[in-house]
Image (tube, rainbow, N blue to C red):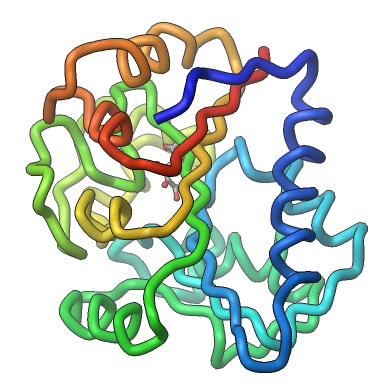
Length: 227
Ligand code: F6R
């Protein structure tokens, strides 16, 4: 994994990642259909706004989201709804081309394989070092699976719900092995509250206690940070 790259602003960081994605879209010809993995959360909102502004052609793009709550997909706070509101409904992506994991976890793995694997995976990081919903102690060889969310993550995510009691207690997530198989990975983080865990993920021991630390073993992964 490359060193941590620090940006002077969130806006600059979002634009930088949007440039990379735009480049992939532009380089894709009729026979190559880019496959992206996308996160939800606060961090990618600037990136999604930027991508929408650029009015790119999403007609041959396939996406796989990293994770989804065990929740009705029509719920306001489902990741399905989040992606539609913040990105998909504002582009020309075909609904048949965006994918979310569900309880049939093997089918998700099979579909990724069937599509030829992931070209680019964008990740966020939780304050406990999680990537997607791979919480501390998730094994390196994990595939897409159902998880019980930790108290820490439920508390972090409660800002999107009316109360902490409304946050789902389970989610479905791509596993660490699923993520590590992507050809290219960019982890994006914003805010001083992420600094300490990022330092551990990038320079610390590779350990399931900090799931993001496994990214050190990826040959083509970069980490971006802004205050
Ligand atoms: C969500 C996901 C999570 C978030 C992480 C950071 O799809 O994969 O791992 O990336 O919890 O969330 P924010 O960006 O809200 O700080």
